[in-house]
Length: 111
Image 1 (cartoon, rainbow, N blue to C red):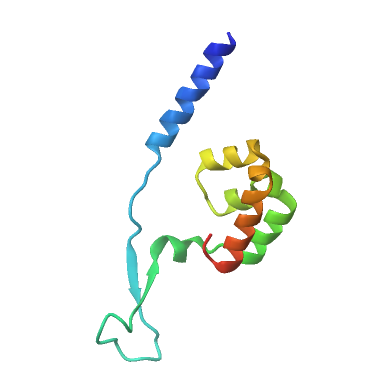
Image 2 (image 1 turned 90 degrees about the vertical axis):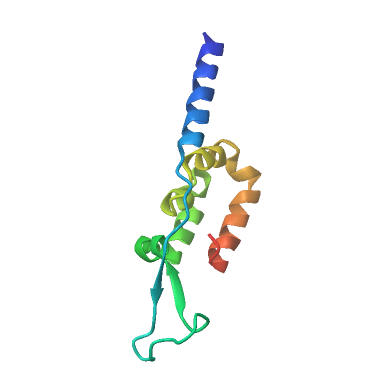
């Protein structure tokens, strides 16, 4: 009975990980209203659509990291893949290593 349950969970996780959508993020061109229209691409700023629509706050992420870090609260807030969040919870944040790396990445803006 246990082996059937374990194999069923394995199939569910493998199915979910292969069905996860991985596609490029479309970028939109934004210019500052105080400047003229940029003549070359180096002056134009590009903002990812997903990033501009998300609107997550760094302070909220750090608070979630501090209080709910053991439950991957900050990772759920930033919409990280579910499989990795569950793995984060099971391994207790990679025995604390992933937990600290997540904080550094959040502060640097790479999360």
